[in-house]
Image 1 (tube, rainbow, N blue to C red):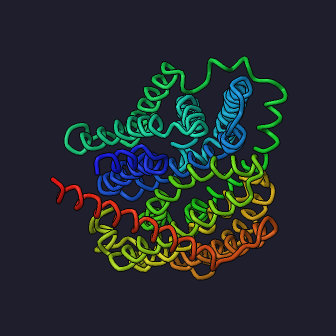
Image 2 (image 1 turned 60 degrees about the vertical axis):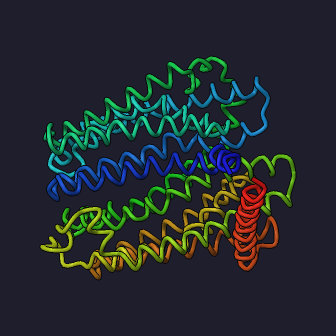
Length: 460
């Protein structure tokens, strides 16, 4: 029994899942503390700071992250060092230009930005961007090398320290919103310094970058960057459009509560995607078509069934989810006229659609077709933006904003199925069959383990 448990604990999927569970768990708890302790105006500013930062992160790291993971799979030591060096060099240059752009925008439109919910983002995010660069570089290098135990350590440190401060802040510090951002910067600085000390970020390989490896990462990255930005916009366009609509900042704060559900839904999805991508990429590079196909169907099927269970729970217990995150303030004395429970239930349905959409995107990237994946995301983004604009300016309804999420995800699934069908005969039925086989195999393993335990017990 102990050997079986030890095997599971050391397995890549488990370590990746635990890392994301810790990250999301602490992030969720911290989000709940902030939702309860900040008024709607300051909470909306925090949400915009984090959402805007996530968008820029996608632009910064999207250029190299997926490319590095794909091409490091099975690469020689010398070529690996060249790729990592190129990753460090490119990410630093992109961070510099992004920070400069944000400073220029703030300088040119100072009065307008200073009086908006975007003030803290334009002022402090450029600082955070440089501070968190080393540990973010470390994360992608470790993912490419499949060192999920070290990734778990980094995530625990970074999220854990900030969460501890938030807990102490409730009773002791009573910090302002600006103080919270400064603490966040300090925690990221400490995490980066430790990653640099351990040599995980690859900065010592900066000089080993070559024109050839720069070109490899950039050629792949020009598509994967757009894909990641588009994916981020799919999650955050709702908040950005609501923030400029007649619905006001209170609606931003309110919509961010059920939107948090999508982040929880992303926990297992990010975890298994992080392990699926290098495996599928390796199979593709080695021309193992049957293995690639098997990995795609198994991950898609297993995750779809798992997400159906999660979505059923959140759909039934939607009210308790809201109470857990924000207390009564968004149910009783709601600052808007929108139904929070309905919003949460719509996002619960969205969760069922996520796995197949995400796995088709990973599949396209793993077979070196990031341009097709980017095209898929373009169609999804256009569908979402059009749906959001109609929802907030015509119907003035947050429920319709949530429904547009279902629409663009459905578009993504259909397009992903169409493009993947060009690689192999795509079958929705095979996804569910593979899911059945996965859980049946898991059940048989558990039964076998139980029988072995009984046999050993009887012999003793």
